[in-house]
Image 1 (cartoon, rainbow, N blue to C red):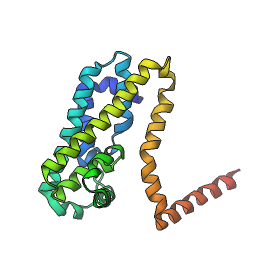
Image 2 (cartoon, rainbow, N blue to C red; image 1 turned 135 degrees about the vertical axis):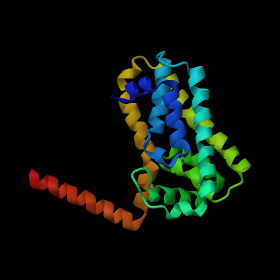
Image 3 (cartoon, helix red, strand yellow; image 1 turned 30 degrees about the vertical axis):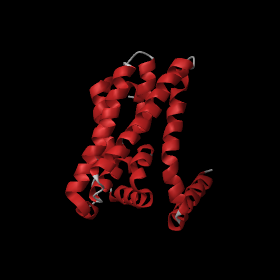
Length: 213
């Protein structure tokens, strides 16, 4: 099942649940939030969803999800950083979100919306760091609006203005995924140790290809 078929099958309730989970539940980091929002907006332009229902619903899901993550982080506090990795929990994502939070403060809640994995753990970190909820909610609402409106309406208006855009939807979605992952790759490449490991891995793979040829 491709992304379009999945979104059609999920419907309004399924989309609400996915956006809610990715926005603040620690097991939601693997959901394709950016491409899902864009594709849902595109499908609305083709008549599969009502954009007037879809956008407010997903904005509500994004804000409510972040708030849930905040209260979870506030309740668990610093103990969450000592939690062991599992299938649904990866501490390295939490650490990255924490580093991002220390660097950017409250703006993290807005910026993290456009960064996979970090957006899931950013509200949890904000809660654990005991950010004042009123301040958190301010950034949460702005971030939720920008994220859903930017990607959801982007897919909607692209579907309305470009003829036969459905032929290009897969390359567009792949581009969105690439752009979403780009900050993580840049961060990885900036760290000397990670860069060395990455280059070593690439070199090893090239050698394997050359041996087979």
